[in-house]
Image 1 (cartoon, rainbow, N blue to C red):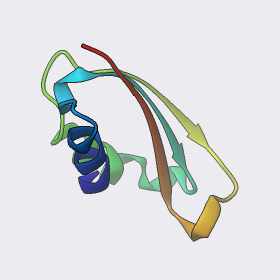
Image 2 (cartoon, one colour):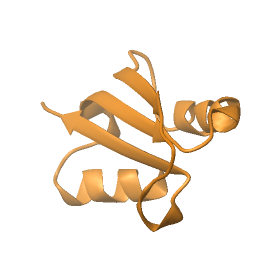
Image 3 (cartoon, rainbow, N blue to C red):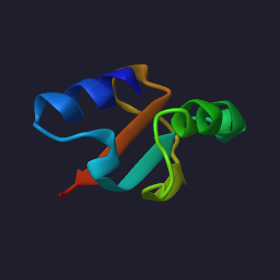
Image 4 (cartoon, helix red, strand yellow):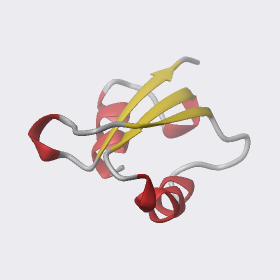
Length: 71
């Protein structure tokens, strides 16, 4: 999430500009912990979100997040 915030801001946007996120989780048992961290980066109204369980991710990542931002 720190990287997401960094890249969002480096692109000239703020976290509040994120409209939609697609979250890919390698282990859905980590959903609750992820959701707690995710929620700490956004304020209401929260962006729309889709969560997808996947078998594996590149570089053995546990989570991958794709976001769309607009002003």
